[in-house]
Length: 396
Image (cartoon, rainbow, N blue to C red):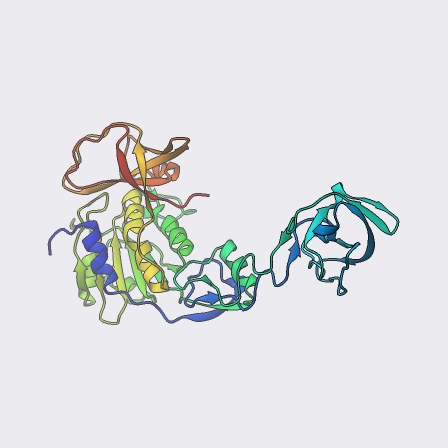
C-alpha cells in the first residue's frame, strides 16, 4: 500500500466510520455534545414588545408633557390595562410594554412629581425591543451537526427546550507501548522517560467528545500487545508508539494477528509518517499513532479529531484559515509538513510564526503553539508576507 497524502488517508479512514446512535440528554448536560436534530423556536422571542431600559412607557404623541402615572410594568408582571392619551406607566428593563404605549423614556430623562411624570420628546419605538426581535416561532435556530457550547445551549433554552437529541459519545481506548515509558508517579529507570503522549491524547479526545479509557503502557512484547488490543472495549482503539517498522515496533503486527484489515499503511506527512489505520473483524477501528508526542498530536488533529466528529455526526473538515507568514521558510520536501506555530492578531490581519525547532519530541513547543502551519509537499521557498494555510489549535 503506497504512502498516502493526508487528504487521501483521512478520506479512507472516514469512509469506514458511521455516526453512532443518538440519545436524548438534558440541556444542562449537553455542552460539548453534537446536535442530532434541528432546534426550532416554539414561539417568538421576546413574545411581546419589551422595554430595553428602566423608565416610563408613554405614547410618543404625548411627549413632551406632564403625564398621569397609572401603573407599573415589571419583568414577569406586566401592566394589564390600557395606557390612554395623557398617561404613562412606570416600566423596567425586560418588562412588557403596556397596550397603548409606543415608546419608553429612560428614567434619567424624566422627572416625577407625585402622580405625575414630566417627559421630554421621544420618537416612536425608542428603547423598545419588538416582539420576535430575536427570533420568530418556527424559525430554525440550531442545525444538526453543530457542537453545543454555552451560547448554543442558551439559545436552545430560550427556545423552550429542556433536552436535546445528540450524537452518541464514541468510546476510545488509548494504549501506549514501549519499554522506555513510565507513568508518573512511578520512578523512571535510567533509560526511561515519563509518558506524556497518552495523558495529552486522552485530554484531546475527551475535549472532542469521546469517552476515554486508558490501558497501562505495554512492554515491547508481541503477545502482551495482542492481549491489550484484544481486551480493549471501544469503538476506536488509539495506540501510541510501535507504529513504525523497527524491531521493537509491534503494534501493527499484533493488530494483524487479530485480523486487522489495513486501510492506511502510512502517510506522507511530517511529522507522523508511520501513522496507520484499519478495521478489526469485530467492528472496532484502530488508529496507530507514532510515539513521539508532537507526531502523535499533529496526527491526532489530522485524523483522530475528524474520526471522532464523524462518530458524533459533526463535520470532519479541519478548521483552517489564511495568515501572513512572519518569516521566510525554505522549500519543503516530499511530505506535507504541519509546523507548530504561533499566531498574532494585528490590525492588518493575522500573521503566523513557525517555531524554529520542529523536532517531533519537543512537548514544550507544542504547549506554546496555537496553530499548525501547512507546508504542501514539494512547496517552494516561502517568504515573509506570503499567505499560508493554518489550522487552529484549541487554546483558552
